[in-house]
Image 1 (cartoon, rainbow, N blue to C red):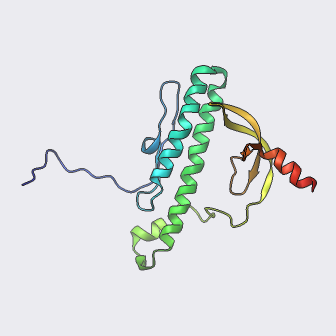
Image 2: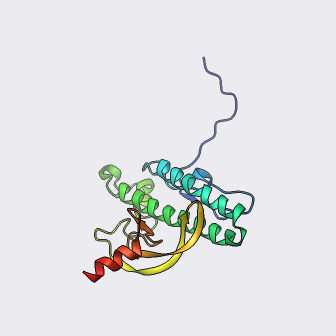
Length: 172
């Protein structure tokens, strides 16, 4: 026979994006940073993505304090971007649920967060910008290629700077 050891608790499946994800003394990763949607299966990817980025942010704060604000902004912007991308993927997942009908639970999820595409079918180059990237364990500014699907920028492609590859392709 099972006996509860305390009161029952639950967590709703409401998407949550924390503010203040990183400071001089802490960094939020995984569900402590954001919880997109437990039903559409993006949580593990999100948790790993923030966990793989966090060491470079912490390393920059500790070993390159002049770049600490850059590192904090990089982390917050990256997780904000991922939160809405995953939210749109979840929204598209719910839109595919045929049995949902007009149930409030499903209809709310089929409309949130907006009607922007999660991914564009054709990725279009929008330009080149100087943006923060992870380089040798530190956050630093580099030129990156901005596209529809990668608005935070692409820095390297197969060991080559993306801006150099783009310039070479445009010369053809």
